[in-house]
Amino acid sequence: MLALVLAGVMVGVDVALHTRIGRPLWYDELWRPHFAGEPSGTFWSELQVANAPSSLGSIALTRLAGEVLGWHAWSLRLVGATLWLPVLAAGTYLTSRRFTGVVAALGAAVAVAGSVTVVDSGTQLKPYVLDAVVTLAVLALWTASGHRLRNRTLAGALTLLSLPAVFVLLPLVVRDVRRERGGAWRSSPALVIAAIHVKLFVGHQSGQRVSHFWDDQFLAGRGVVGGLRFVADQVLATLGGTPPGIDRYDPNLVHSLVEGHRVVTTVLGAATTAAVLVGVRVLWRRPGGATLLEALGGAELLVLAASGARYWPFGACRTNLFLVPLLVIVAAAGADELLATARRIVTGRHDSLDRHDSLDRQHDGAARIGPRALPVRAAMVAAIVVCLAGVVATPVSASGGLGQLWRERGAVRPIDAMVAVTVAARAQYRPGDTVIVGGRLARAGWLYGMELSDDTGGTRAQRVPRSATIFLTTIGGGTGAGGAGGAASRAGVLGSGDVAAVVRGRRPPSGGGVLVFVLAYDRRGAPAALAQLRRDGWCTTSSQAFELTGTLYGLRRCPATARADAPHRPVERDSWPIHARR
Image 1 (cartoon, one colour):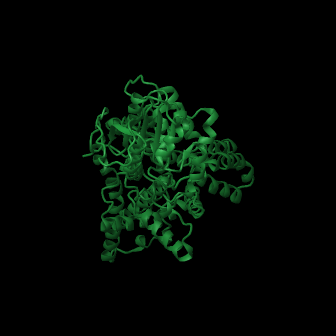
Image 2 (spheres, rainbow, N blue to C red):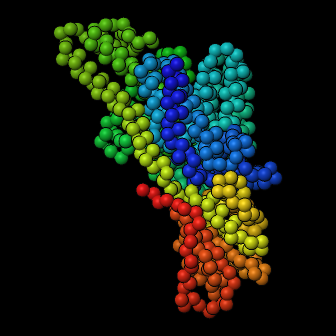
Image 3 (tube, rainbow, N blue to C red):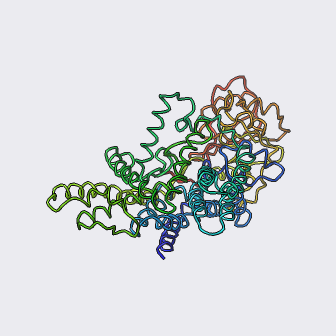
């Protein structure tokens, strides 16, 4: 019943944030539907230049949402992320309830699903909330009674929905092989499914390894001493998160109330560490608890190994949200045991007040303290209370930032006007025009807005064909950097930023024009490029600026000049209202 209540509360949170869910797609949200919506003939080649890998299942869900509900920001987010927030709340509570009391399980569910960082991710078209749900589902299937071969095969099939689920699955397979007779045979179908998915589908999208975006979260290239320091720093950052394991680095995510307050974070981190240590001891002795611990510990080690090969970031970053429910459950089990211990000390009882076995009686020094040792008893209770206070503060701090998320529900975000840019380009485009799109991050978002998006305000202007569009990774000279540069060239993206050379090579017909879009991140090269076009006989006739996204220039033929003595002042007009961030 409480699981349904929690799910209902998260539905209410989703409804309250409906304005945010309906906002235009931004940044990497634009890339995902582009790759999911590609026609079958170009799907595989386009996938090779993906900015980040995606699972087959998440791509299929995005494609399904677009085809059935339309390619709208709200529909893609609803199916890809928002729908899973209530499931995550209920799943965290039910899994915690196997090892803790009601209060601790409720706290765990609030700390995970109610975390402002989790809700922030869950109101965007990103796979992290679904990843966390799949982690809980895999663990539930693996520890369920009944037909083990069937359950394990289903767990393997779930790895098709979640990229990092393989990190959880592999330790479970090893546990089966090591501890159970016939475990290798029962686990082999799951292992085969996961291996094929990773090798053939995920491996095809590994071009992002050459990018430097995740360098701070990669073990690779640090040496022995640097590697040890890196691991220690990330462990501390993981335990210091509220909740533990949550992202603490992404500036585009809203974080907990205490994030950035070093002293408070340190105190809460110490309390969480104590609860986790106690939780490990408690879970190791309970049915299913050891399986959870091996899945969590094995997954952390595999992620660390993957970061050493630059395949997956390690530590307290958004890609590892899939492990947050398990970390929180361990801490909740420890907090539950600490509370039971404090109650035993106060009442002088030796038996456990929890429905599970508590710490062994022979190790329970508190239970053997006599009535004349009241100062010692009081000191122990005080220490436990302080630790519990820190643990209790975790769900409060994690969910307390939801107010900020609500206040910023209509904020403009980077590149979120890309669909509006394509609408403006369609209004200006005439057959025979040359369209140039400049910026390393522009291509996928432009193609989504131009070819798929239904958030076009009812415009009936024709979509600009891909054959009429040239993509440049830079504007104003030089070559593209980062990402899968070589693969991008094979996909029709040119590294050179010489706009004038591109126009000369295309030779627009008489009366034809040129449209140039420059992404906001690459705008420094735009003045020089426009000046060269002016010298070649192309005058800027219109200019539309889109906040945090870029500028669209329209150019037409005019008398060529030797040099641009008096720079042209384009007519500024904005046909798509954009509100500034407050």
